[in-house]
Amino acid sequence: MALLLGIDLGTSSVKVLVTDEKGSIFGRGTANYPLSTPKEGWVEQSPEEWWQAAILATRNALSELDIDQAPAAIGLSGQMHGTVLLGEDNRVLRPAIIWPDQRSVRQVAEITELVGEQRLIAITGSSAATGFQASSLRWIQQNMKSIWEQTSMVLLPKDYLRWRLCGEFITDPSDAAGTGLFDGNGREWSRELLAALDVDPGLLPAIKTSTQPVGRLHPGPAQEMTLPDGIPVITGAADTAASLLGAGVISEGDLLITISTGGQLITPISSFITDQQGKLHTFCTALEPGPPWYLMGATLAAGGSLRWLRDNVLKLASAEGYKRMIELAEDSPAGAK
Image (cartoon, rainbow, N blue to C red; front, top):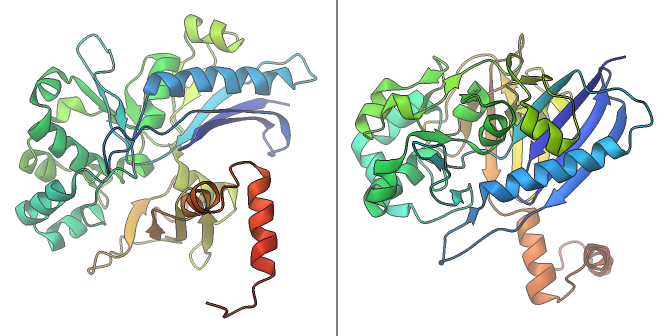
């Protein structure tokens, strides 16, 4: 029986599972970290805090194992769209800008005017949006020129963890598809968009399939995580694409509804269909074989809105707060407005 270790880098925590090949769970761990909002509309996180949380969550999951067996492979999933900048010495240059960030409203308008909304949708499967990597990079180019000039690599959140694990700069189509820099139909970086936005292709990681082994766990992180070194590290997938797999939503006609910090409705599709109104996103799945794309409708505020209501209006800032909110909702008849 082979054990597998999965690391998911979420918006509020890293979650780790140790499973067998059939999905039975043998160990689980979690570790939290905060959101930083240094200015109105800004939402950032520390990549180093992600890494420390990944170490702690992994150690917690391994501590639950009742068998003396190391995982045969490590896989990754994580929050989409975020922007991690590394310098020439692979040092993190600034906090990561993550998906709820709203600072790039003007840059979204610029990108849309520069490329054309219909052309953007035709290439990427989505309109430009705040929090997408393309918009965040445009903002950095214009507002933090010294940081941009020092940048030697741009990574998505889960791909930063992979670099810490095995030293490889890699991403996959499902995560790259949410950057606003990716040719969704061709499943590669869009040379047209990179040229239009003045982004050197050398700043972006190589693209590998989600199931591909891309490196082996280095001795340093292995020691921190209480794992043997040399374990294969798999490319992995964006959290949304991974959630489709986890829920068994792998065929056209299936629909997945998820409510976490944000909320999504998602369905797999077998051809690169796009919404010309820009209300839906067309992104890549992690399925091989299977429908290569999915359509998604999303809201940035789902569970996040509940948390805001719990903490700031009802003043129930504890895990029991949600239970009390359910009780209050049950007392209100449907249609009570």
